[in-house]
Image (cartoon, rainbow, N blue to C red; front, side, top):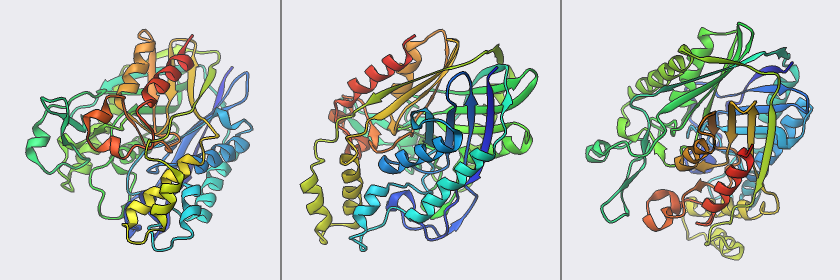
Amino acid sequence: MPALATFRADVTPPVGHPLCAGWYATALGITDPLYALGVVLFGDEQPVVLCALDWAELSNRSHMQWTRVLAEAAGTSADRVVVNCTHAHCTPWPDEEAQRVLDAYPDVPQVMDPAWCDEAGAGVADAIRSAVAVPFTHVGLGAAAVEKVASNRRIMGEDGKVKAVRWTRTLDPAVRAEPEGLIDPLLKTISFWDDTRKRAALHYYAVHPTSYDDDRMVTSEFTGLARERRNAEEPDALHVYFTGCAGNITAGKYNDGAVENRALLRDRIYRGMVDSEASIEKIPVSGFDWRTVPLSLPPGLDMIEEDLLALLADDSRGGLERNKAAIKLAGLRRQDVPILLSWLDFGGCAGILNLPAESFIEYQLFAQEQKPDAFVAVSAYGDCGPGYICMQESYAQGGYEPKDSFVSPGCEAVMKAGIEKVMAS
């Protein structure tokens, strides 16, 4: 009989820690704590770890380090560990190689405090070691539409080009008035049951979890607050929230940055969680299958090491521009290690696909098409080294994401081939 253990650890940074890899100024205070939450699944083979981390991103060598540390704690291998970020912006974004590069440039916004980030990972590992396994006999499958949260960021003009960007907070009422565009409206939940007792619930929804993010106050944002409300209601069953393929999805249609919107968005996500479990279908399970596929995503065409090093050394350039050069260097210097896609399958009737970085919503919808008769949940924001994983056509269409992508247009074919392979029966 399969079993699972749940874990929770505080990963709140200290005041003064860099936020969003230095793209924002350092933290002024803590609005609410950040957590790493997840489950360890035990079956016939080595355990599988699914961890959702209340951080903006976790990239390159730092992501590799976390999978190794959590794997050791769970008694498994790093390729059986998922660490996916929820992507609230006013939170850490560790990338130890980028920080190592920036150690020589103290005048540039720093990425992270490596010692503290190591301590945070060790704390999560301790929580996994302390977790107690219990059997589960069924998985519960549920889904519900979330109203007035997600909207596509890319507003297209008649010429096929991006005419406007719908940011996480969108001030222009004309841009907010544009249609929602391509989204996945469903919040999906996979819960784990020991007969009639719920042990854990994993929730999946695709949206940038950001309401207002320029106050330098650390927060898990509206998705984390909704999750914590569910945990307060059901303390004996851990609720975990994973962000899906939200690279081009924000709440911008429904958010002008007003402070009260965070609570409104929280309540809509909370309602989606409750509704998704209101009429679940419980499926008996006797085990699970775990599959991975390695991906080597081609780096951005402008990512040339000597050019990036020259930019870093040029103190006439802006601090953020030099900071991004360090992050791009970190991505180049990890090309020897592929990124893993993973698929957790429950007897062919349901599964969880885990993807890297800020994948576009099209990849989530493509994954669901691979198994139209199964329940497919999708989590993104795994190894965030690639930045935005756009579609081939996105680069010609323009807009924000292709400019901030650290991979090239050829990534769409690689991603889709990987998804098809890892989900193949």
